[in-house]
Length: 429
Image 1: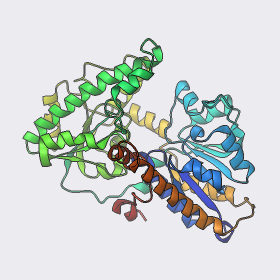
Image 2: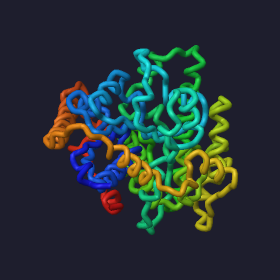
Image 3: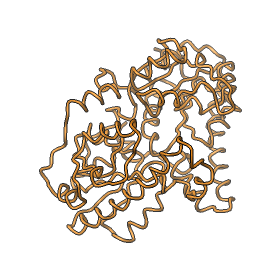
Image 4: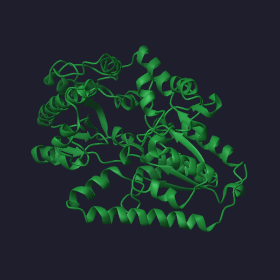
């Protein structure tokens, strides 16, 4: 494939959440650049604004509802190709239906035939979309998750290992410091649809207390812990832990869980899908599920938690969890059932790397895009994005609570004036 044919083509990749997607999206962009494309990353504050002024040759989004149906129509009618690279896969009816809705919040229908390709994690989603959204089966590719690409892994591990703690407290510690009252005012306490929220409040509260007791025990034994907050959490709140435990506690702020896993010998935390990364990487996991008294009551939630718990040791007290972490010979758990589940859910047995597969496919599809291209579009795209990034910072600084708004923006939204590829990211290329 000639790079010259692609040299004036612009690819825009939407990054929905900085600490969840920046690494994999950035690396996807770097591989597309090697094919000759000009690649730009945008975020929540810049994506829609950019598309009002410029139409890229290819736009890769994380969700179909990132744009309104009329915006997708405009993008394609102006000569751009639309792609979805799903950021959260699923393998059940309600999950796929909410990820790929028939209509927008304004009750306008999404036209799924506009998309040149939809990249999903597994065959369940692929078949569901074909059947329920009437998408040609060849326009849906089950490639796995780009966040699990082996291209994003290195062996430059930190040999001074600490104990890793997975934090999943985003309901009680919202990234934008939203007060509890704001959520409670807006929901219906009698609705079955909000039952999960009240369960989650109790679960998050107890698991945070368990985490604090665990930290107290292991640090008293001389161990250091590195806490990996959920991408939707407010990092500033963790200053409470650092004030209490001092230098024994480090808060991980890296863009990717892969960097964190290289620094820890064991992982402790509430059961979640984040166990996947540690399990695949071969890091021993200790779950607090048997210590908790507050748990999800829904059948679907319980089933998922029980599945991920197979990856972990499940002590029934915090003291026993701390003792497990002190065992240097502790081996990671492996089960055939979980291997089958992960292989099916993430398509792990595929011979191709998901990023390589997507790059090659987009390159082939874009090679037939013959629209007229003014070379000045490349400079204009870069300029617009930098202007939008600057305006986002200015808007936060002029708000009623500039420090809080600015911190939330910096934690959650990719902004090229604030964020640069890390040393770990640069080492990958």
